[in-house]
Length: 543
Image 1 (cartoon, one colour):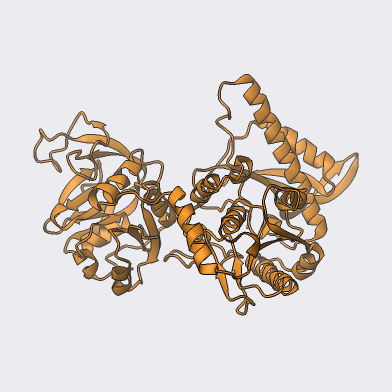
Image 2 (tube, helix red, strand yellow):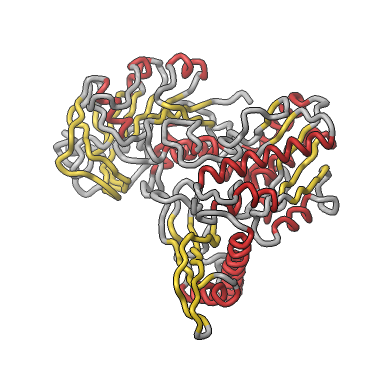
């Protein structure tokens, strides 16, 4: 697609994906690149604007991440966030120093609403600080923003003026409107900044001049046409897991090339309870989709490969490599296959360390686990540029049923990363049974809520929830007998974009019921924990 682009230049900040995600919400396409990316390569992409992310360093320290000043001379708008703001000030002749008072968390920020960046943001402030606003009659508004910094901008470069401040931070935002350079000390991308989305909208739409043409209906149409042209009369093999990503990819391909597509569903024995049969019901010969569907039951093969393996990254690699080996075998059975389709999405790419400068969080079997030699002409990843909610929108555009489009995310390695330590058939059985009980009780409580409340869902309703198996065994007592069994961990989070998440406040009586059922019904378990960890610092999955 011909598309306008904003580049997020990553300096190692934890919110790089979130910045890109917020830009996409403005219907503007966005890519994350490392700050090590050559300026010439950035020019080739012809971006309409550039955003510099936060990062853990102090910009004035020797060896701190930096960028050539040519970036600020390209004639396009540049917005620096947190570290990116400080770096801009530092490199253009200003001064950044260690702050006497560190700001962390929600802070009241006084902004100038007469600027393009903050137009219409905030409420009237009762007092205006003459320290920053020399004109005491200036119309100044206040808003709440998320701060996280040890350094502060003490001197602005020539041409810049302050357009926001806090009680302890004299330059919470600055601009050089003539050069279209903007610096924000706080994080507009996080939900704690109550008008952050509006600020980023003003930057990408009003300042950068993007039209907002990045939409999922046009993406779906363009992708189908592009796939049809690329594949021609070639044969296509699609990796179908039954999850949202692979299902949307499969339907895209079916609409593009029809019977040239064969979908292979590998049941690696690491799926949720009864899920293999459910996938076959939807996509198999009795389903509603005109697909060539093949199911491979490979549980024993996977358990053998995973025997004795405890490292989570090694487990992911093994599951990914075996996944491809099986596909190679199936391809040979059906004859010459030209293309392999995978449901890789943009967070998979970024979290695998391929989309920016942030450290690798975890490898994905769709990204980091591919063997060096694959028996296909090319791998096609039609959703590689999309975030999860964009994939769901494409699914709806394609007419995929809502219950499938909005199903909970499930990792490619499946229960292999919800079992801490070695994976065995018995451990898989424990997790499947415990997880099924957890989901049943949540569904039961939600149904009761719907019958007694005007709201369709309770405010505690998690966006993702599951049971995982710890590697801890402990002594217990059941029926006057000593036990030495495993502890199950329940995980339930609320999130908008799955890049940040908070623990869901599941009602205590639900957790008590789940605990009792798991201990009484699932052989091999004598303790149940509830995981309260947010993301960050944890991940949503257990490993």
